[in-house]
Amino acid sequence: MSRVLQLGLLVVLAAGQLAAAESANLSNGFSIRHERHETLGETTRLYLGSEPGSSYVDVATSQIADFEAVPPEPTPADTQPSPTKDLNAIISSASSSSQIDADFIASVIRAESGNNPHAVSRKGAQGLMQLMPQTASNLGVKNSFDPAENVDGGVRYLRDLLLAYNGDAAKALAAYNAGPQRVQQYHGVPPYRETHAYVARVISDYNRKKLAQQKAQSKTAASKASTDRRTKPETSAVNGDANPGSK
Image (tube, rainbow, N blue to C red; front, top):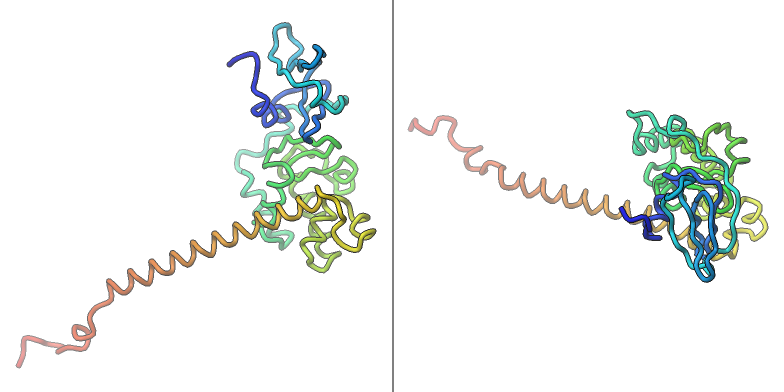
């Protein structure tokens, strides 16, 4: 692999695979973890490792909003889920305990972290359901990078919000994204572009899944009906002579 990595690939992989001492926060909302940086006029070089000759990525200096220190990433032993518990199983378990549709939980996770258990936002939210450290602590989540712990805590919080807003998914999602105090302040979804986009993204993804399921079920039902018609015996054969050889 070339030492100079493509930015698009790096944005996806950096948070989950690279230990870093600081984070470069980009103006487009993404962040890149790295060990050190070097400003070269219009280009800033982000070194991904501390060793001499380590890989780096060049980013336009104008695209970097700021730098901030970040904590060391957890060791693989801390972050790896149990081999028998993949994400679908974790979501299914959380759905059973919370009575929230598994597809809805999956849509929230997709919008929050893109299913990346190592995701870290610019504000410090962590893991699959992007729990802020204080929120995670309040929920009893000790390791936000553990998928099972993170989803369990995030879904419990989401359930509390759905109950607080009498099942109003839009308000619950807005509170999850911007905070309950903002929903209370604006008596509904706050007028933030990011929050409106987030709510729409989750609901659209959830509705798309349900529509696809309905189409698949309808197709299966139609196929079964067609098969039944082809294999159904003729009435004359069923109602004919019990002993057609005797006259």
